[in-house]
Amino acid sequence: MKYYGALEAGGTKMVLSIMDETGNVREQTRLPTKTPAETMPEMLAFFSAQPISALGIGGFGPLNLDRHSPRYGSIMETPKLAWRNFPLMQVFRDHLHVPVGLDTDVNAAALAETRSGAAKGKENCLYVTVGTGIGGGVIIHGKPVHGLMHPEIGHITVVPEPNDPMPLGICPYHPHCLEGLASGPAIEKRWGKPARELPPDHPGWELESAYLAQLCSNAVLSFSPEVIILGGGVMQQHFLLPMIRDKVLKLLNGYIAHPAIVTDMAEYIVGPGLGTRSGITGAFLLALEAEKEQVRQEETEQETQDTV
Amino acid sequence: MKYYGALEAGGTKMVLSIMDETGNVREQTRLPTKTPAETMPEMLAFFSAQPISALGIGGFGPLNLDRHSPRYGSIMETPKLAWRNFPLMQVFRDHLHVPVGLDTDVNAAALAETRSGAAKGKENCLYVTVGTGIGGGVIIHGKPVHGLMHPEIGHITVVPEPNDPMPLGICPYHPHCLEGLASGPAIEKRWGKPARELPPDHPGWELESAYLAQLCSNAVLSFSPEVIILGGGVMQQHFLLPMIRDKVLKLLNGYIAHPAIVTDMAEYIVGPGLGTRSGITGAFLLALEAEKEQVRQEETEQETQDTV
Image (cartoon, each protein chain N blue to C red):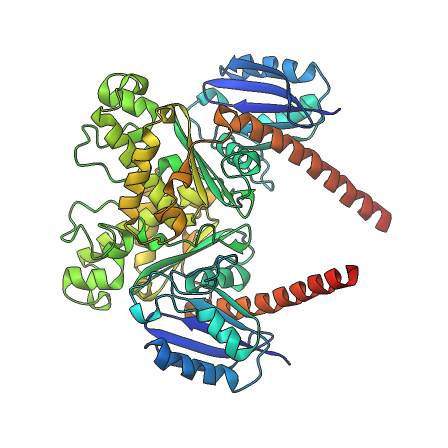
């Protein structure tokens, strides 16, 4: 039996897991995300304690995912200053001597959802987590979207609701971006208490669902996902999903006349099929993929040598 | 030498072309888009006049591009009522007896731009045309994006500018969607004269560039294109591009700290490399692809028969 390391590297906590090749968890632990100097040695110790064939990381970002860049695998412009420019992938590779796969935490989660979750069998999906921040992973043609960098869909501009007492939001970069208006901290700042303490009939939920509906509607129009998955702490309020669906229908207003939208909306905007395990499962899939890629590279090198 | 048919099927005009296998135009004509009863016979006559190996169509939409649907290849919910539900691809295939490839006009244009235009060598791009309507084609991982249906990015919600005298726009489906605020007809309705008659210092261009900047900024954040190409009649005002770039930088505000954005914006948001020929060139590429796919299908069928 082979084993794989999976790391969900979040801004507030790290989830570390060792899984066997079928994805069964053999060991798992959590660590608070402090500075690299404090947290890296603990993580390296965990993953060194048993032989693993590869490591997969779903990480908070923005990340440098450009394979041609000398800083491939580093964390980029992040408010968590201690981690800015930290070469996350490289440090793990140098210490563990195994292939390391890296993607955003949300791309990893989206990937996992297409393999065995709410988007199973789909080639295109959007996975969004609404919590301390708002992040989105996008799968198109079966693969995570990177492009120039990777999606940062939490920061799209949305239209402030006319009755929003905090219409500019709290994002230090962007007035009335989605994260600044609809993340957990935005809700708490606006109403003076955390989201989980707002009763279902609180006006805050009308605002919250309106902002998340704008995200969903614009995503449908921009890149046409086959399913939209909304997870994260704020989405634990299960009355939110139906409110969002209703508002998406109103926003699209019959223009996208596809049955998935018009008649099957309840199966189109959904919660994660893997619950809170999308991210760590995605990290495991990235480990498998990193191992496969290493094999492919070695085969290519062997062929080149044979030819010479 | 083999020949291919290429059709750019627009809402106001049809561009029909016969090209040789290297893409050189042998014949080309234009027809006004009337009803199917009037326009289809003329188009069929053009493409029947010489033997072609395949036909590619870049069409106005929305289109049904779901290969598993019984209505694959039909036009869907369109304001051009005579064309609603018209089985465009099927009618050409039945009459011409050649493989027919179909995608949106803007996906076709985007594809052409990645092969030989402003996105040459890129795997990910957004192509937008700003004219009678606003439409966008998206290439990700080297292939046009369909997903649930296909992008309809002209209809995303944008934030009305505070000084816009027509802040709700003119889209019959969506208040303050991009097309309703920034298409050619929206400009004409707002200012009482067509876009081409507004001088470069007219306040209308500040509005126009602000709305198109919102599109670009949200696209960067949503699916991270490697290049954004803006074409169409309204973009013939060449002072618009620099205005849009400036506003995109302000909107992103340093959050996407990629050199393509921060230092090389002049090469990031650009005009079409193929000028006004992106669409018809894309249709030609769709014809080549349709032929290849037919060959692949026949090979698969042959293998299946051989196995039996």
